[in-house]
Length: 337
Image (tube, rainbow, N blue to C red):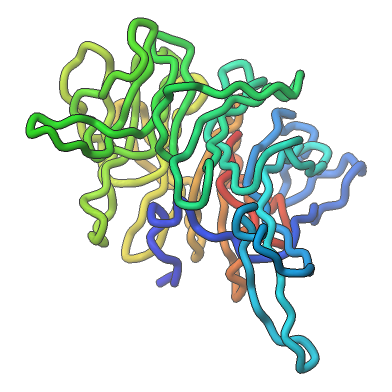
């Protein structure tokens, strides 16, 4: 049994290591990582969270900047390490890793637009405060705040009629509010999804009408969340099995998700109607946050391997299960392709 905690509980996990690097021989034109030619991989960048450590003087601004601290012993003296979390981009064919310009500390990548140019980002306004949604255009570098958008930590972009799916407060009949899936459509700013109370991790199908999301049982439950799918005008959502972190393929034909059995988490896929479930990964380690390449041939995910607790990015070719490791050191996670 693997020792990883439930993957759906790691939504805002603390990244805890040093730096990311590219482990492969580049520019050789050779097939690497078990037979995957890098030149065959789509060039669309993978957005992910990367953590770097830097020694420095402690100050009151550390907490305000969203930096984390770790004390460790080195040659008998205590040093303080500031762990700086950055939003980064990985170009798979070239191996280039670069930071997203002007992204604030702790920014989370949530989704790419259908054209691949706009990245949906979640920014925490202050420690423990609500998360504000922004888009960043990778061609122009311009940020655009989505005013009045749901403030939860997971969201997705659509082409319409559903333009945005997020997590926000939903008013109940007794006057109370609960977290749930909230939609921004062509005709309404924030519309609670029917049957979406308690839902997290929404994603929008390419048709702009269908949403998949996960619903945990409760905050203290160790049971795996249940996946639900709903379409505008079709009434209550329909359960399509257990899992977490669901993501549509770009053609909308299938969904990738994390499935946990006996404490072991793997990446699975299924048809968009919930049928034909099968695993994509079957390693002895935990895999989380799967995301599909634009051409649908590859899935990227985060996994901690061996004795190290640091999470790295891996990519598997869907057709035959061939895997390649994309980052070699440091702490890297939450990939969005």
